[in-house]
Amino acid sequence: MNLVRFFPLALFQWLQHTAIGEYVDHSMWVFAVTETVHIVCLSILLGATLILDLRLLGKGMTRESIVTLSNTVRPWIWSAFIGLAITGVVMFNSEAVKMGRNRGFFLKVIFLVLAVLFQLTIHRRVTSSNDAEGTGWAKLAASLSLSCWLGVALAGRAIAFL
Amino acid sequence: MLSLIQWLNEVPISVWLREMPYPFPIIETIHILALGASFGTILWVDLRLMNLVMRDRKVSDVIEQLEPYAVLGFAAMFVSGALLFLSEPVKAYSTMAFRIKAVMLILAGINIWFFHRGIYSTISQWDRSKRLPWQARFTGISSLLLWLGIIVAGRWTAYV
Image 1 (tube, chains in turn purple, orange):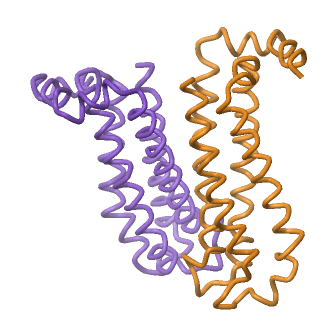
Image 2 (image 1 turned 180 degrees about the vertical axis):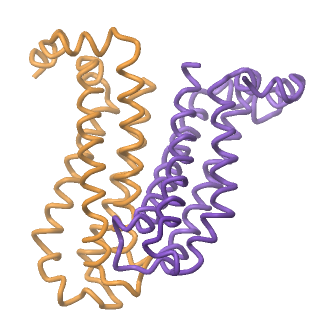
């Protein structure tokens, strides 16, 4: 399964021939720098998510309340996400056709959509009050949130092999 | 030193890691996830020491609650990193980016050691203070810069 089955191939060809796509494709340095920023943003997002989800699991940061901690880390999660999205789009554009045909990339997009939807709905709701403290729902939300992001990262790595 | 590295290069596990298709990408994935767990939590300690986040929380609370995960993440990162190094010792050793990375790692270690032996031993005096001692702020900034440098040098090692 890949993206080309759902979107016209011409779209990917056009993306690859946009100015960004061509520029990044012809400069190894730009790609390397973009990838480095992507990795830094990834660790910020992963770390902030881990902090909040460990709290929900009752395994860390237990001296902070869920709501306070969530309000503290959320701006960092979304800033890192924006950084990841921008650098991700730049890298995608440089090899859009290949990515459109890649199964790993398709999997990554699926996990990404799941992760974002989950963060914006159930996860947001669970972390919006301290009532979820210690409940099974909090633990389930934390596990699903971590699994989704882990899925994004693993599928991202799998792009090179699938 | 070079002869030791060359010997390491021919150790069976080194050859195995280098020649099999799967070990390297799997270990590399673990390395990057561990980076997220370790840098992602150290970052919060650094930002707290720079007085940028959780200002109304005690510094010791932030450090004590995050340190176990930072240490765990670092251990996983170090072991997986050592295996990645072992897969091509001669190549890594002769790469400038890798040497810079090794130096920055040592500096980051010294930084934490100094912090714990030094200003952290008097934390009860400034734990809730609005203005943190310069040593604490310095530790935060230098740790953050060193880790960013380590990540950049690490990526650079993979490219050359």
